[in-house]
Image (cartoon, rainbow, N blue to C red; front, side, top):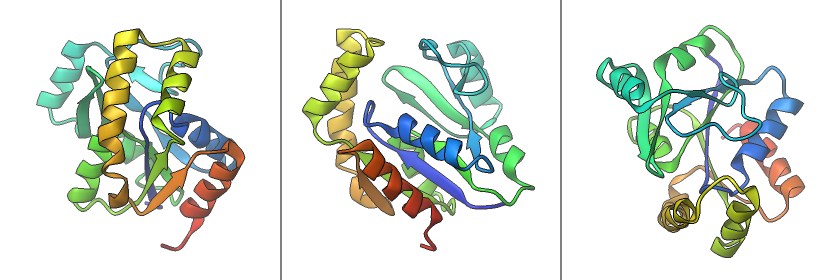
Length: 183
């Protein structure tokens, strides 16, 4: 297998935008599609952005040991299936995992060899503005995501690379440099 890159960030920090830009510029890079129990957002594609399943199916997959990692985040399940990792096993390309902080730290603490990258938001206020601007979460969901973001920021120093997303083009250059580095 090629190299594994684990990217995490608080909700609305720009992680998905940066990953999509990287994938567009590096078409040989593989993306691990996660499973989730949250509702599909406008523009998201089943099997490309996520596998959208119900809670019962997710819990069945947990019980059958089908996940490399999984977590309950913002009151929804998210997980990386072993099957997604297997798809990349015989290739020599980069595999990007878009994970929440729980999943990223679980993999790191369990010795999964990867580059671990944390995307840091400019500020909590900026996150609030981005979440409101998306128009996809309720006020209650936004409060949960902000509370979680404050906790997640406490763990950023456990990652190999920290990229502050003040300006998307600069953050992208740093992401590209981190993924392509020998570290």
